[in-house]
Amino acid sequence: MSAGNMTIREALYEAPGPRARRRIAVVTGLSVVALLALLAVIVRQFYVTGQLSPRYWSFFTRWTTWRFLGQGLLGTLQVAAMSMLLAFTMGFLMMRGKLSNNKLLRGLCATLVEFSRGVPTLLFIYFFFLVVPQLGIKLAAFWKVSIPVALSAAGVSAETLRSGVNAVPKGQREAAMSLGMRERRMFYKIIFPQAFRFMIPSLIAELVIVLKDTTFAYVVNFPDLMQNAKVLISNYDAMLSVYLVAAVIYIIINYLLNRLSVYLTGRSRTGKGAAARV
Figure 1 (cartoon, rainbow, N blue to C red):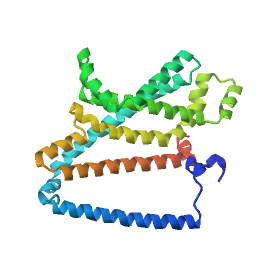
Figure 2 (spheres, one colour):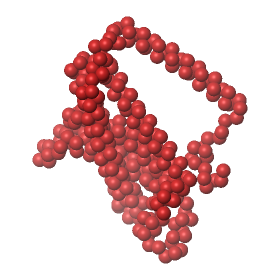
Figure 3 (tube, rainbow, N blue to C red):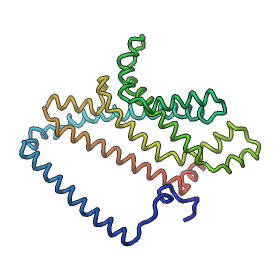
Figure 4 (cartoon, rainbow, N blue to C red):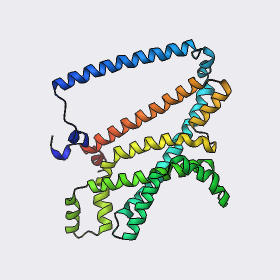
């Protein structure tokens, strides 16, 4: 495989030899056995304490239960999508500022990035929930979640975008400059489209984090998946079963996002995406 087609994973990790593969197989087998034993102990404990009683699970056979959870899931996905869009936009602006030749702008954007990365998401949400209304600004619950989550993710998005831009070979910039292209046109026509391929896995990983941060929506009573799960817990007094089902839903979504990242990465490497656009 040529160096140009080599992924970061392939560059950093050498393929294991026969002995290493055998060790990995043994360790994997022992780990699976240990996890199965632990799962058996947990299930037995649930049975002993009565957590497997039908009254804690029977309401999941009703369509209304799944519709209610589906409505919450839709709210979660809407908030996550809007938050990621806002985070990407703010991150792009901060990235451009950090790459600027203007010292003042570069320093301001660097400060904003560190502030965004350093403040917990929950603190941003409390600010928009408690402080912003006192300033006379009325926001819907959707925005009281989306904007704080986006602010928390913007700094990481900016650094992800900057690393992608820096990963583009310098020869691309030099070739564009030799053709007389201006800096702005060169960035948007040559540098950024190539850099975006390097960013895809990291941006989707950031989307997973954003998705998990939306669980703080309970603070503003936004009807997301976790908020609706809490309603079911209050109605049926079934904390374990409801939280377990909600956890499985989050795991499935994150797994699908991970598979999407792998698919898009492979598609960009083979050039099929570029061929489709042509």
